[in-house]
View 1 (cartoon, rainbow, N blue to C red):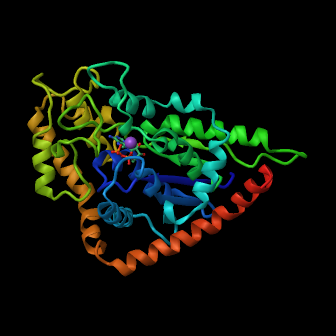
View 2 (view 1 turned 120 degrees about the vertical axis):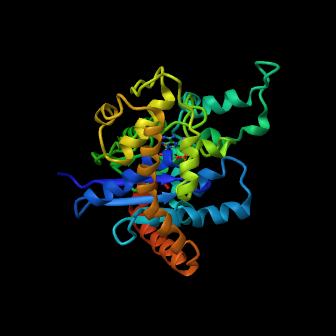
View 3 (view 1 turned 180 degrees about the vertical axis):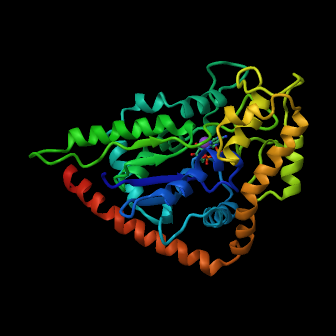
Length: 346
Ligand code: ADP
Ligand code: NA
């Protein structure tokens, strides 16, 4: 089988939550474990993406360190995977500019992430009034930067959450446009078309409002479980999770989103099938389910939490890891960027 190049990234915008973990990060570790010897794995902390929203510089700096420590704590092994800060490798921005000049604006306008930002910035009192201060060109075009992140390494597989699937489609489109535009004299296409890799849990929902996904940006801290939450915090948040008053437990995401979300979390944390898990609770109540979900989440998070606490303030150690990752990433992308420049005539 052909060699795989696996790339994924996460923004340094705070400690990841259970949705990030079950929807993306846990899969990174699984892919690392199951990788063949010659597969290449790259995991990036994408600081440039974070700048699309206002960031406090001091907090951003410490969030970058938090994220590096979290990724190590969940089991990303820097001797096996290339673990690095995106902003340490300028090849991403260089390729981003070249791809931007090949990206039709209409494609970016159709991104659902952009459409929801646009909707959020519309003044409630008048449909056509847009609050421009909430929108910037980076926010509009960040899917192109994401494509550059992936294509700089000619990645073949991209494990991200379902909400990012449309961006992988765009990445494939841009790879194809580049290949068709710049493959003269029988040159083989430069970029493989990367595949989206699905995670065990597609969408973890907010514990307080199960009509929306668990997210960093929700103002209600009780709506999400952070990877560094203590066992008593986990217990309190799950006890307070919104469910319903229907007796018995069934898996029905449409009419019982809160209850189904707990079953989703339990199945993902115990590596089991949600239908099998649900059977065990047919004649039980929400109290019983919540107590088992609490135990399963605690079991999954206690190792990473302990490891995070151990390494978070080992500054020299973290800096060494970041430096090594930066060199490896830059060395790996150099050949691609070289070819890109030559093909476009630079
Ligand atoms: P957030 O959306 O909370 O700001 P990011 O955008 O940094 O998080 O996403 C990091 C990764 O986690 C992405 O691959 C994203 O698809 C995934 N992800 C985010 N929220 C969830 C969720 N509630 N359920 C499943 N996956 C998620
Ligand atoms: Na997101």
